[in-house]
Length: 309
Image 1 (cartoon, one colour):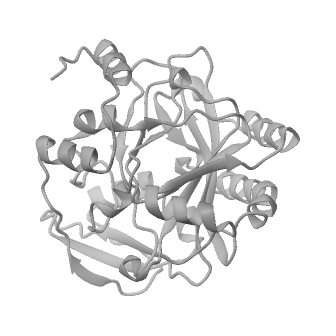
Image 2 (image 1 turned 45 degrees about the horizontal axis):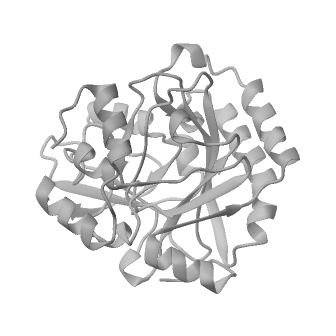
């Protein structure tokens, strides 16, 4: 794995566990970002569950949010990281509501040559104290970023993924990451992560920043819209790709049978992944050192009326 952390102990922990967390922003910087979020016309009262500003149809606002988050956060990341670049920045919002679960998943593939040690990360910055009650993040520790080696394409929800039917098998094995305002959770985009519903009385807001190695080639894998679900189109992209194409945009494009425009002729690849049963995934998670969280399981069962196994 190619190093990005200046602190070698942190790099080693990240390589082993798939995530790390530490204080990043001071309270003035947190306030500046919260004020920016509150100045946006997002009509949050009409939204449910989890959503990101990056999916908003106002592309100029999306760009302004990205640039302002970069302005505040990148000087702080410079203190902790080396030889890196950022490709996205947005606000990650979880509305109040009992059903707003974000199931365990891995993120899109963002970089080429992961098999050679390149990787991408999501840097999730708490803009308020984060607890299980307001939907804090949780991760599968011990190296879940090493469990699967498939491409992770768009769009969602049309495209089948390895963890799609295993959400409630995996969730009780995640480790809750409670955070103070200004803390950052940096996780490999391959790391299994999730968050419970926000059952507090206030909207939960975080800033999300995508980071990878400075010399990494950004890529995007898009399932060929021919109805077969068997082929991927691999595009070399740049940071502006994510300004033009959100998951919502790509989902609409796919349903219309259209290809991504403006990024040359893609490379066609086979889309395949290992089908894992609930029993198999539980065995793998236990082997990584994860334990069954009865408190989380009971909470999910009460919220969703699930019978526990």
